[in-house]
Structures are given as C-alpha cells and as structure tokens.
Amino acid sequence: MRVQLKEDAICTLILVLSFCTLLYFQLGQTSSRGNKERNHTKPPMKSRDPPSTVDLRRHPKPRHISDFKQAKPVYKELKHSTIAPAVTYSSFDFQQYLRNKDKRNYNLLINQPNKCIKNPKDPFLLIAIKSTVEDFDRREIVRKTWGREGSINGMHIKRVFLLGVPRNKIAVAMWETLVNHESQTYKDVLLWDFLDTFFNLTLKEIHFLNWAAEFCSNVNFIFKGDNDVFVNMENIVDFLEVHSPTEDLFVGDIISHAKPIRLRKSKYFIPEIMYGLGIYPPYAGGGGFLMSGITMKKLSRACKDVELFPIDDVFLGMCLQRINLKPVSHDGFKTFGIGKPSAAPHLQTFDPCFYKDLMVVHSLKVSEIWLMWNLLRNHNLSCSKKQRAGKPFYWERKKVVA
Image (cartoon, rainbow, N blue to C red; front, side):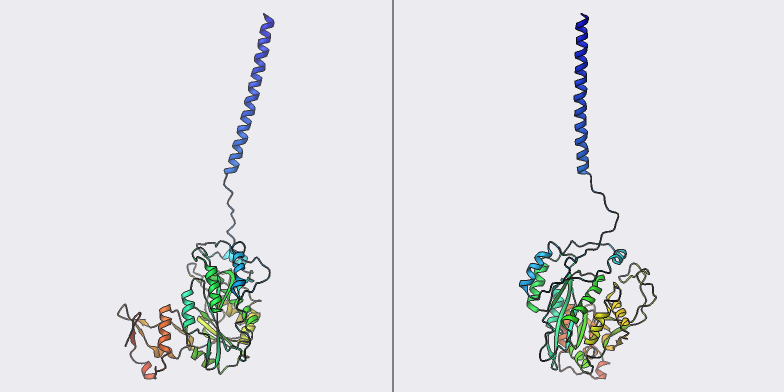
C-alpha cells in the first residue's frame, strides 16, 4: 500500500513539473511576441533638429540643355534625384539659412547658350527678367509688348527669363513639361535647380551674372528687372547710345542710407546676427537697373567673394561696394504704379505724357502693362510742358475715355 502511494506521489510530482514547464514556455513565447509587436508598432522618435533646407545639388558639374530632346531625360531624372519635396515654413528659418548660406553653386537645367552668339553686330542690350514658373502670363505680356526681341534704332535686343524650381511643385501640375515646351518655343528661358523663393533671389542674381559672363560676354549693356515692370525701350536705347560698354555703368533708382528692418513681421526682416551694421550700402530698387558689359563682368567676379545675403538688391549693393563702384540714380526709374486713385472707384487717372519720358515703371498689373504699351507707342502723342501740367484723362479697365 505504501509502495502504491509512493508511486502515485512521484507521478503527481512529475505531472506538476511537466505542467509548470509547459506553462513557462507558453508565457515566454507570448511575452516575446508581444515585445516584437510593440517594437514593430512603436512610432519613430522625432528628431529635435530643425528640418534641413532642401538641397537640390546632386551633380558636381552643371548640365547645359538647349533643346527639348536633351531636356527630356534630365527632367525624368529630376523626379528621382534633384527635386525633393518642398519644405513649408510658417516663418523664415534664419538659423537654417545661416547653416546653408554657403551653398551657392546649383545646376543649370535649361540653358540658352546661343542667345548672344556673335553676329556681325554684338547684342546691344540684353533684357533679363526675374520670373517664376507660375507667371507664364507675365512672361507672355513682356514678349508681346516692351520686351520684344529685334532691333531699335539699329541696335539688337535680346531677352531671357530667370527661373528656379517652383516651391510647390504639386500645385503647378506638369511644370517640367510646360517649361520645356516654353523654352523650345521662345528660346528665352534659363532654369536653375534651386527653389524659387524670395530669399533665394540672391542665388538667381549670382547665377545670372555667372551665366552672362560665360555665355553673353560680348553684350554691350544689360537691363535686369522684375516681371511687373514696363520699360520704355526707345528711351533706354537713347540713354545708352551715349555711353560706352567698356566703361562702368550702373543706373537705377538708387536707395541710399537704408537701415536694416528689425521688425520680425516684416518681409525684409534681418536679425542683427546676420547683419550687424546700421546702414546698407547704396543699392538699386524699384524693379530694375541698367549696367554695362564691363560692369557685369566685374560684378560676376566680385559676387564670388561677397558673403551671400538674403535680400538680392542689398547683396548686389554689397558687390558694387566690393568693386568700389558708386551706382548712379536716374529719375526715369522712380515711378511706382500707374495713375492715382480717383473719386470714382472704377476709374483711375492716367496721364500718358507723364510716363512718356520715363524708362522704367514698376509694380504694374498685366492689364496695366498692356495699356501702357498701347498708349505710349502712339507716335502721334505729342506732349508739351503745358500738357504735362494739364488735366489728366480717365481710363477704365478695358476702355480709354477721353
């Protein structure tokens, strides 16, 4: 009997040990699987570092593209390499800008290497207009009005538009195809692979100077401006004919003794850590300026040694200071807008005689550029001092009323 009880106790102990062993392994597997699931579903740690600026430089040497067949594979490649998703900031990140401000060499995606090719006569004037991919309508109005290529008084005129990669590429559908087609049609588009933002206009400045020094070194004079200006090309040519392209010339609406804006809400806010001086060097504002070919070459060399600055007009003033060239102010560049507000909300005063002797009018709508073009090219328009001081006439959006 005792032997039987002893055998039963041994069997029971063996069963208990087996059960405990089985339970232990089951619990171990469950714990291991749970840890794997938690590790798999755990969200990645967010970096405390600020987002880095999109760097579009992936190729050590620029690629020059002059026709549609060459440009097509480049844009196909851009989708996988040089164009990264745009970063959206609620305000400008100056710290990030300072970390990346020395990146100043970007690839030329669309080139016009034959724009200033030598003819019996070198180009007298090159028109260079800052634009964006989205502003196709403004480029069209410039092409059809004051920015036409051809000759004035026997002087050859050429034209280029300066573009960067659009910041919001999703909103500009098929932008590569459209810009390619535009370049193929008009042969006047220059496109670089930096993001086309306000604070990258300085990059547009230095890349254009480098391009002009390489591909348009034989040009006599250059007008560089915004795409919201109207330029009286006859007055420009008359002014330049008495100047030599081998002498320094830099003319525009020159702003002197301007102070850096320290107000954070301002578009032109510059912190002291970026610019500690109290006054900017003289620079050209108002939408455009004229320079000679020799000045262009000097500025192209100087801008390589001047530290980048986020306001392009001021940066160019720093380059002028570097070459010890004082810019000259001209009254023909000092007009902003068209007319003055009148008592009638749908009417505006406009005196064509006031604008007839000007060279550049800044800050215009597309319709206003077209209006200015149609009125000022009227050769029967005769303006005396008395007429200029007289009563202006009124114009509506689509119809001029005497």
